[in-house]
Length: 114
Length: 114
Image 1 (tube, rainbow over the protein chains, first blue to last red):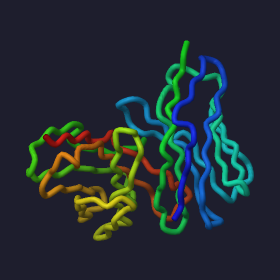
Image 2: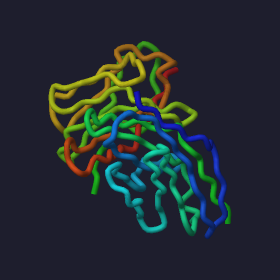
Image 3: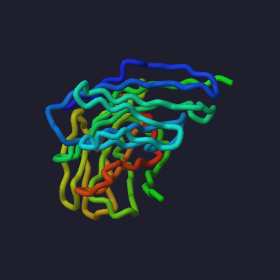
Image 4: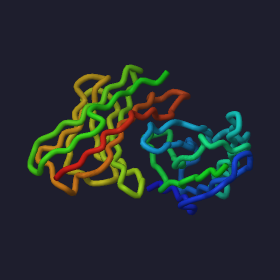
C-alpha cells in the first residue's frame, strides 16, 4: 500500500521569507501523481500544485514550487515570499494512475508571522 | 471553477439517529470520495466511487454507507449515529482517466453526535 509521510507537524515562517515543507512517499508504481493541498482554518481544501511522476521538471505555480526527487521518493514544497494568507494546514498527497486512490500525509501546519 | 457542495455544513444530532450527509458536484466527474478528518487533521479515505452504481470501501473501516445512483450525487448515510462518529467529513471529486487527476473538495460537514 502507498504511504505518504510528512515529518514536520508544524512550521513557522516570517512574512516575505521562504519556507520548505517536506514530504516522502512509498510506492512500487512508476507512474503516479503527487499533490500539495492547502486547508485554511475552517475553510475548503484547495489544490496548490501538482506533479506528474513522468515529468522530470519540477512544477511551479507563482510563489509555490516543488523539489521532486523520484529516486529518493521525496516531494517538498517551497513557498517563497510568504504571506499571512499562506497560514494553513498543508497536505501532501499521492495518487496512482491505475486505481486513482488519493492518499494523504498527516499534514504540516504552517504559521506565518508579520 | 470547481463546484462541489456539501450539506449541511454543521450537524449536531443525538445518538441513535439516522443521518445522511449530502454531496453534489456539477463538474461531471466520475470519481467521488468521502474522507473523515479527525481532530488532529489527518484525512482517512472511507468510501470512493468510480461512477454510477460503483462504490468501494476506503482504507479506514467505517460504519457508514454510500450510494451513487446519479453521477453528480454521492450521499453518505449513518443508520445509527454514535459519539464515535463525531468528526469532519469531506467529500471530493475528480476526473477519471484524464490528464487532470486532481481532486476538488467540498467545504465539509462537521458532525457532532451527542
